[in-house]
Image 1 (cartoon, rainbow, N blue to C red):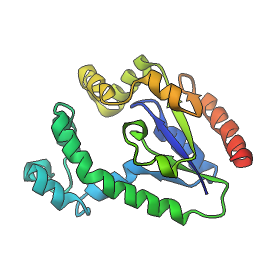
Image 2: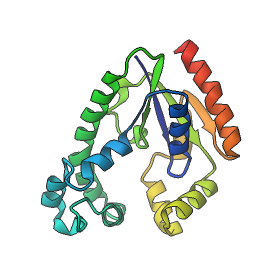
Image 3: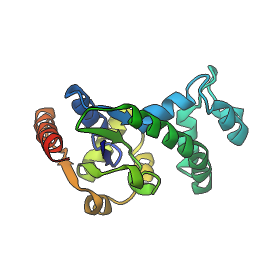
Image 4: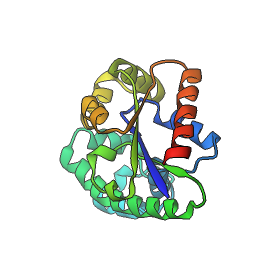
Length: 198
């Protein structure tokens, strides 16, 4: 089974690209979806998060307070590493299980925003597909979508591998600076390529 890692900087359009691949009946395993499930109300990792960070980082309904945690870890590298050490091994195990269930298709997508920030997934990924756009677009999209200030968005971007490095490491790049119609066309082209050459 060929696994294509789908990655990109914050605000690049990874989620939309994932949806477009799903509309073509391509299996998509999204580590963000897994992380959300693990940290939602009564999620598998909620008790450990409370143990490590305190109950102040939980919402009233018993989920991880994503906004509070994001603000906390993006201003403290040590705390971010602590959260990653807690969650990432479990997310990886769940992702591997999900990938193993997908059979009899030419390829599948592993959506993983922080692919280049870890070597954990290298052994299970066959190709890297980068969704990319200019940094001004990244900032504007993220501010609009998440209602964040520009300094917060820039801090989040600085925690990721630099754009120039991502472009060097990718096997394929989708430029996402134009319309949804343009994005659909590019995804369809790659789908045809992956279906026949992967």
